[in-house]
Image (tube, rainbow, N blue to C red; front, side, top):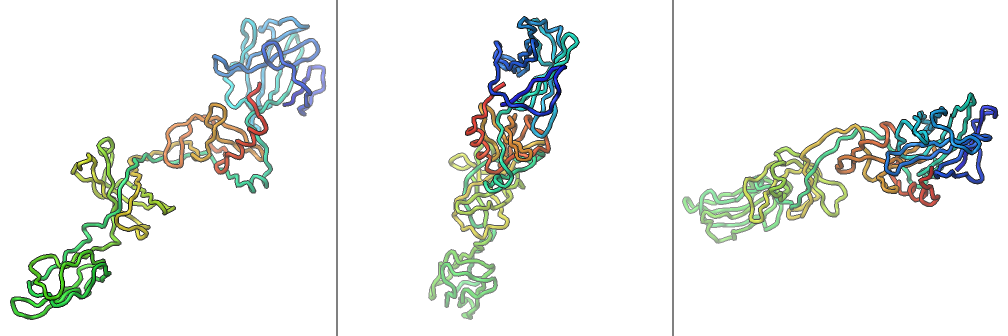
Length: 395
């Protein structure tokens, strides 16, 4: 931490001079001196929103606050300038504005007393780290811009993959008779129009062929040569590429789910979710009090097999928020949820007021401005560097 003092009779300088040891006043504030005139300046935040307070003395004796004109200019990260005015109390001057977090800035102090002008400048930083661009790149530190995002409200449910019952066919003999031959085996894949059975009709003793009604796989084979067809299902063929997900939804959330709601299905072993749409909400309540929600699947379903367990996220609402950050960017600093804002090679903590969460995004209600660049990948590196350097909360 460093600082410098200027008076009306001193030559002004924009440089911030290093101090060997900072003098602390009786109110635990920073002492700023010019000859016999002194200002003790501190940020007070116990029992009150953070504010600057100033105690003034001349030749070691208290000066009535009403006799002193005092202003500050706070220069924050990215050369953002924030003026601070003061009002006089009985024992001290207090800032007219609340001092927002983080309390990390260069402070320029201007005081007027008995026709004299005094100026001091010092820096007080917290939650700040400096990392060269090349090093940051090698560490995998990546940034993004704070801005609007579309958040989705989802309901998480569980279920499994099934074959679409509308793509299943039960194959029978059109005219009952003796099964002369079965041309396909159990589990064999067939094409629509492929011969699958030969039946000798009981009516005219002529043999006719039965063809596969759809592309699919033979799920059941209930006929063998020499048997009578007997009006029963001889084969069951299903299109095993036409899949649905059946998800169990309980009464507390059932009313929010509508046909057409988008769905994401997560399958263990697959890195990319499979997208789908709610096709049907069953009107039947099952024994466990759940309702079956059937989801038609889009691309990627070829990697699934019937019976596979899935986790589903059904999107029941979506809304646009003006500011949001990636959830993985958020770290903790003291008692705050924070991200690290970047300005050149400098990274500094930003305390956030957070709102709704959805997937990868978290709504930001305050604490950072739109358009600010923040660390979104490997933000823990910045946190570790700040903790290592011991950047404390000092004023």
